[in-house]
Length: 390
Image 1 (tube, helix red, strand yellow):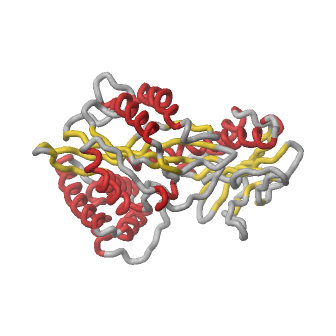
Image 2 (spheres, helix red, strand yellow):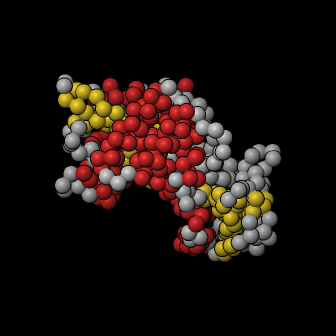
Image 3 (cartoon, one colour):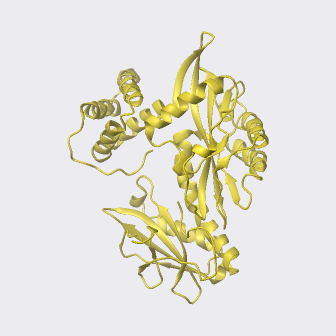
């Protein structure tokens, strides 16, 4: 995923050095003809490293380029992601392209947000509306019959590549893919979080993949129809949850979009959650916004308290993505969302807060109205998931 990386001055491996050199050549290229050379060399090397699951070479090269050549970093990240989520294969002598998709679902609940197997009726409905509103005509695809939490997704590019490879035969047969739920790792409970349904799609090379690639298609219309007609198929699965579907897209692109969209969603969810659990109108809530730093500005944290009290009852983390810290617009955006949600008082601290966590439970510490980093705890007798965002 493209995000801020920790730069290391340690010596790069031979493969990492070559990745960085090739990506720099591609970034500095002045023609499509030269681009084709660099991309071809990178694709061969990336494919070899993905098969070897050499995550360290990718990380070393990306870390170096993040600090030394931002455009080369983007080029390399794009090609690594493409190598992990796409494939080419022949079907009856005709070349086909395969793409791993993610279908993100934003959700919040005062109970646990589920991770579980998807029943056949839910899969059947999702399949019908994915084909009708999101994918282009003629696509073959497989849905995985499981609702993933972020912790349960493949870790790293190599694991993503292996999962995609397992799905291509099912996609070519238009048959869904079964995962044994008992073998899935446990996941933590959070007030608001993202859930993912994964799919693999195959289409003849040169044919459109998505509905909006077709002459009469439209991305916004596809999203509206997907939400309206796809969402009801998850009602039984998401019992006790409020949820919202995002537009299905390529695996890494959908993951990044979900990272962006969960931030405002989590703020609105926090206000709704506190009103539900505490029986308190939004106008009687206080929200405290503050920047938290490690070596640089990493995130904003928002502490929630009741009107007239400095004791925090809830907290939300707003992580910064990419180069957002350079714009300085985030605090105003957070305040706008809180005001629109009806929060009565919003306090903004401008001093630098250290990136601290509770020594006992590991939860983030949040800013209170007095400008201190403290634990957020619900009043005694109130129950719910841990009061912070994934």
